[in-house]
Image 1 (tube, one colour):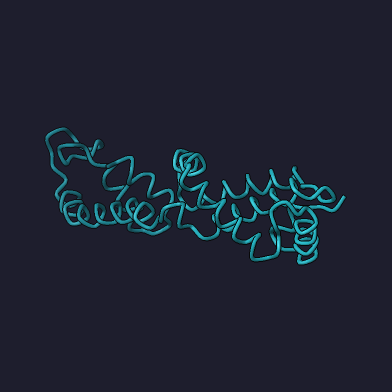
Image 2: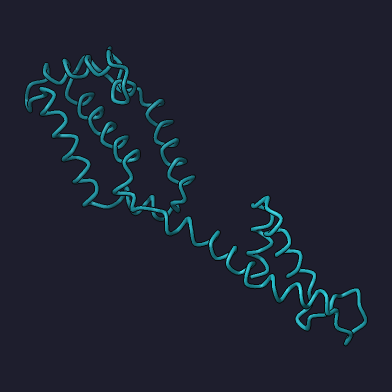
Length: 183
């Protein structure tokens, strides 16, 4: 608890959090400040900490529990899923159309940005890796990408339809187009 409150005091600029950390760290297990003689109680400090304990505990609990409760599953995170679908669409276009290539270094940088975005939202590396390795999520993303390709005129076995779509995406300057380049 002391470590959590000390961490909270560093992260939170509020006086309450700092007071909580100060009260807990300045107090010995017996309610005696280290500067006093052993066995002599500091009743003022004891009284303050007894009233501050519930506030400190509630503040620490609220701060530590909120990020975990607010996270939705990565499969439902719209921004991340939209970017992954766009990457899959761009990949299908570049593999099918001989006159369009991928901006691989740019795509790699965007993938790293997307991972940083997920980490900043509070997802752990283990959660991110599990999501990316999930066969069900891959199938879902691939299906959405194939649906997008079909709705926009790309036909299986017709390389020129993929080229037309690729040139249109590049001209739109959207996420898909930013991952592609005409040869």
